Amino acid sequence: MAKDYYKILGVARSVDTKEIKAAYRRLARKYHPDVNPNDKAAEARFKEVSEAYDVLSDPEKRKAYDQFGENWNQVGPGAEDFMGGGGAGFEDIFKNFFGGFADAEPAGRRAGGARVRFQHVDAAAPRDIEKSIEITLEEADTGTRRTLTYQTMDAQSMREGVSQVPTTKKVDVDIPAGTADGAQIRLRGKGAAGIGGRAGDLLLTVKWRAHDRFRLINDRLETDLDVPMVTATLGGEVKLATLRGKTLTLTITPGTCSGKVLSLRGQGITQPNGSRGDLYARVRIVVPSSITAEQKRLLEQFRQIEEAKR
Figure (cartoon, rainbow, N blue to C red):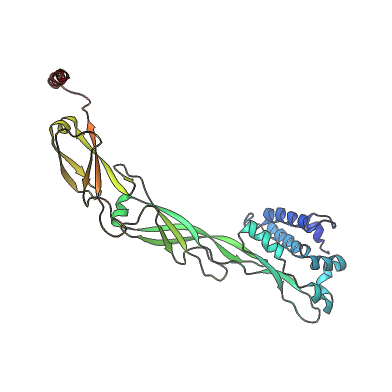
């Protein structure tokens, strides 16, 4: 049965190229193999729609088709005069919808007026992809090795054009000590593969996970230092655990106020240049939730003395 390209696209013979493009866009999006995986009927329909568009979107091919019908590309030697286009319009539309992985140009032309069959050829290039990975502050400080499993949409050649297929990949990633929050690591050849098999790169953004005791403020590692009310008033010593688990004994001077910051040199997180930053401990006065009768009596005396000073 003769193919009616106008009927395949659902348009009248009098429509202009703009309407043909619009019809193709609608049908290509509906029947594309990526939208209908493992659906042979949809795949066949997509190929049929692409073939119709390949002809009707090119003025010279359309003119020949309107004159000779389905046998437009079986005419004699003069056919070369109107078989020279590659369907650039198809490339533009396909790029818009399916990531720039298709091109259309004549293939298989033989001398003597033999049948010319148009098909899509390789046009899928390797592509970089972006992923992110979250690490703890401890891992950022000492460095770590992670195994990342992810998917890429690799190009695959089809009978008509190029399709994208999801591929699961796994890669071991070495994250050096001192890797900054938001830093990007480039892994060569771990991105999406093109038709030739060569793959783009994986661009991995490192993010620091929020910590329950430490926080990063303008590249400064900070923590809270709980100081009992009496110690803050009279002075004394308190303990503080660092990011690496080391326990330090800090001296609190009498009259220390809440919010005071103590700088602990070399006790912070590893920097990109390999040095150790400082840790900033912000004093937080701790008031007892319950006290004994004797403690209450002594505090009352203390309050009376303070009020007498005013």
